[in-house]
Length: 626
Image (cartoon, rainbow, N blue to C red; front, top):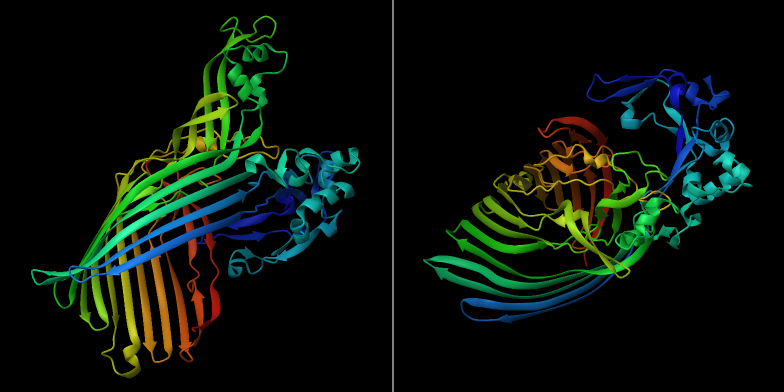
């Protein structure tokens, strides 16, 4: 729920000074009017206006359930000779996930801002019991809010904890949707009721389009041979193996038909045309309903080979080489069976070029018929990666080493949003749609280098010998990524009545050449260590360069990046005996501020966006080993 001061009353109720000159904005409210429930110095419409009122509310309910059954069997046979072991095994899992999510569809005006009687009925001055005071004086350690106005009235937490009952009671008591509820004997309807009171619910508060269920079955079989031999006086240890994987997915979700309005109003020429034989299949599809359906999605099988070698070049130098094929499975959110169908066409008039008139120039046909959909994709295949690694390790001291590694990942079946073909069956008809959503888009390459150093300085005298240092630096280069970045009108969202939301904000600021999400070009870790007798201490600093958070931020529909940042954590443990340890852990000691940027054009121009700070945290830990 939100408390609001609206429109041209803000400057007299809560005038403020915003200072943007420093590294962090600060705000000072210049009037204490907002501290006390009352009326705005200005009037509006036909009378006084409250300085604060319950503006709106948003109900969100999620209830997810999951279960998994798995079976695993491994066998090992030891050998004499070049091959020292033969290992084999089988693995099977059967996982079920049901997601129930109302997806923030339940927005409702409470003290309807554009209706004066509703606004006054939900005001703090008339309903003080609906509000409580919240202190913000220590917000950002007191560095943002300046002056004496640092606490505010908010809707009571109890109203939110019992949101559905609050809406019902508000209708009875006359502070929620006051005008309409008073005219309906204290009962609200339409958008003003909680989910459980809305029509078309198929399970508690959930409509059909709020529910998706996914079943994933994986069967794997592997065989691996371990070997150990000498070639040209170089000892070589390693393994070679094959793994067979079968991945099957079935998903139950919603098929959302085009709205009934696409049929045309009953009795109109468009409605008559839509029922003609050549268009009847589109008329039937445009029923405006949401129905649950189950599809057998991906049935994917592959062989994953692997080879790992470790070569002792000298007593203190080891070279390791590995090549393997790996899978990354789709998220069950992307793989859900949901399709929101849209029907577009152009009306053909009796006299083309003239204005439409139901009597003199009616609709006689439809042209340029398009069926599109916003969709999840239960037919997603796992992403594949062919990984090649080459590492050299130098053990220059009993407790010290340096490594330098090169890696190359050839990615395929990368999952990104784009347009793809989708076949939908409704009744006895099959429809070919152009859908937008997650799909296997293509390939790309990740390659880079890694340097590591680790050493305990045991050459130092006494307790100083417990000091140590670890350092790791990684550089990553992304290339050859196929960036689909295609666009589609709309979004996978619904209003409170289950109608698809026409939201076209994602049709602008669409840029190509974007990197993969979550990958920084550079990563650095520095860990100070101390191990002496019963004391163990770590002080770790982690830094990463800028990286892409998302292709589409949810408010501005632009690519969002996280700026380069570093964090410091620490831990201190004391070993009491062989079974017990006690310690303290600290995270984000530097109170690092996470800063984000939005990309504004194809050239890569970025502007500052949202900043936030994660709290510095401390934890007391007790560990037991038996």
